[in-house]
View (cartoon, rainbow, N blue to C red):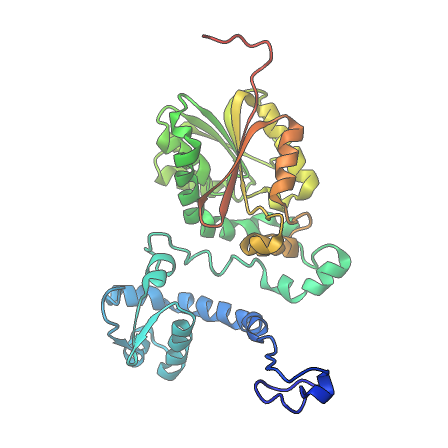
Length: 371
């Protein structure tokens, strides 16, 4: 049956054609398709604005939320040293995307831009945005990756080059998640904890735990070329003196058995696939003392993937760039934890889209109850 734009349908939907009395018929909207098509351009609009310093300059000019927009495109272009008409097109695009205020040809920050896109925002993502998709060339060759079952240009040959900017960009968000997790995990109630943070990146989890537990210590691990970021961030947060830095691959470094109260696997499992994740969970089990806890943070996929779109797309990002990266479901993770022997599993969401499994290594059956 021929399609016709709504509502001009009487020619194609008369009873003689469809076998029933004529009724209105509205084709499905094309908006989801256009949203995907414009996604590529929207990403680069935001990256360009960050590169040009649009949000920070507006913040410096006092164009903050709650204040009527007062900066014109020519004024801002003059300050940034760019073409005024081209900048105006960029600013209008940002306004359409909900990332700036625009009233009467004047511009200012909205709440979203002030919080997430200004360098000094309370939860700034300014350094994360450009690196979050990974190498852009891999996306243009995604069909080749799916045909071959591996990325055309995997980052595994030089992982530090890939992970350094990602670690830098995600640190603020991960630190917020790790800090907020204490409201539900209550690691701050544990006295004298020894922490093992594997694949720590900037070590947000170790930092959050050490700041909440003045008598805790940590072993911080990551690859050479990445672990120096953890050295810097722990120093900035004044906990470096309680950290031992252990560079190397988290699958092969030496780990003392039954020596840790907390083991952290923070956003590393989706880079490892099912086999690598199982091995990391087993290493965590062996490293923990009885009654020690594993904190496993990642983007877990719900039983129906459409319930967790952010997690699905983050998994696709890793699949597009890494040899072993793959989607990991919440159900799979729970099964692997239970198979390793963990109990008291909990899945929490410390902040939006950041998920954390907590699991406990049970005490030995022959342990005496102190009471």
